[in-house]
Image (cartoon, rainbow, N blue to C red; front, side):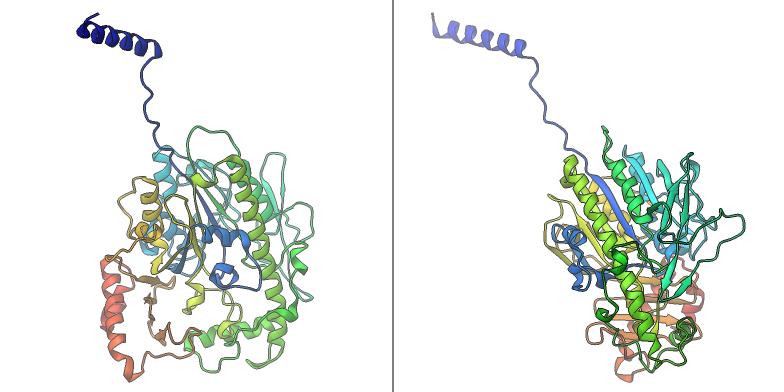
Length: 499
C-alpha cells in the first residue's frame, strides 16, 4: 500500500472510530457556589477566639475564620437591629432602605441580596429573625412579603424567645424566660398575642437548636441548583437565659468585669444612659458593688448563649461536610451589632462606643478566600451585598450604596478601597465615621466625641475639644458631612451647619 493510501485509510478508520464513540465530551461548567449566611443578634466580637477571646471557647466559629478570612475592622452602620439588618441585605444606608429605626418596615421596592440570588437561579431560604417588616410580633412572614426568600416558612419578624413548640398546622408557639439571680424579666406582649409561658424549661425545643434543625433540614435536601440560605439566630440577645447545660457552664466568679464599668466622666448621652442602667440594676450609685454581682450573673448566661450558638454552628458545618458541600459553600458569619455588657457602665447597643459597631465578620470559601486571610481594612454592612455578589458572579441591583471588598477577601491589596465605615444613628441626630486610627461621632445638641482607636482602645479619653487634635477633627467632620450629602442622608440638614 502506498503511503498516501495508508494515510487515507487510517484517517477513515479514525473517523469511523470517532463516530462510534460519539462527540467528544465538553468541559463541564464550573459548579456555582452555595451561600450560607449565619447571623446572630447583639453579639460582641470579644467572645470569639479568632478575635482574641479566651473566656468561652468557640472552635466552630473560629474554624470559619481560620480556614477563610477574619475581618478585624468590620462595622455595622447602625448599632440597632432593624436598620443594621436592612443595610446588610440591601447594600444601602438606613434612610435609603427605609427601615432607619427599629420596627419600621423596609421599602417594598428594595432589591435584597436574596432576590439577586433568586434571579440568578439559586434556591433561597431563611429561618429566624427578620425584623424588617414593621411592628408584627412574631409576625411570621408570608411569601408575598419575603423579599426574595422563597423558603420563608420559619421566617418571623421580631421577638426573643427561648422555647418553641410547633403546632399541628406548622406555626410555632414561642416561650421564654429571663432569670437574673432571683429576678424574672419578662418582655411585654402586645394585646392579641397567643398565651405565652415564660419558662426556659418549658415544653418544646430550645429556639437556637430548633432554628438550626430547620437550617440543616434545608441543607440536606437533594437539589439541582445552588442555594442561598440565611440563618438568623436571635441569641445572644436578651433575655439573658439559656438552656442546660449552658446555663451552668460558666461561673459568676470567673466572669471579668470591664475596666470602664466605674468610669467617672462620660459624655452627656452616655451618662444619661448609665443612669437608666443604675435603675435597672437597682444600684444606689455608680459605685454600688451590687452592679458587679448583677453583671457577673448576666455574663454567665451571655457566654452560655454564645457557646450554644457555636455548638450549633458545628452541627451545620458537619451537615455540609457530610453532604459534600462544605468546600463549595461561601459561609459568612456576622451579627447585627454588639452589646456593651458593662463597658462604660452601659448595656445593650445604640450608644456611640465602638463595641456596639465593630462586630465579628468571617468568610470561608476555599479556592477563592485563602485560609488564614487577615483583613485590617475598615469595611461595613452596606459593603456585604456587593462583595458576596461579586465573589459568586451574581449581578447586583444597581442600587447598592456600598462597595465590594472582594479583593480584600481574596487576600489581595486594593489601593482604591476607601478604608472608612460610616455611622448612621437611628435617631438621625448622630453621625460619624470609623477609620483605622479614629472614631469621630457628631451629636446634634450634645457631646461629640473623637477617640484614638490605636492608643485608647477602651475609649476613655474624648479628644474632640483637645487643641492638639483639631486638624484631625476638622478633616473627619468634613468627611462625615460630605458622605451624608453624597448619600442623601437626613442628618445632612444639621451637619452642614457645623462645617
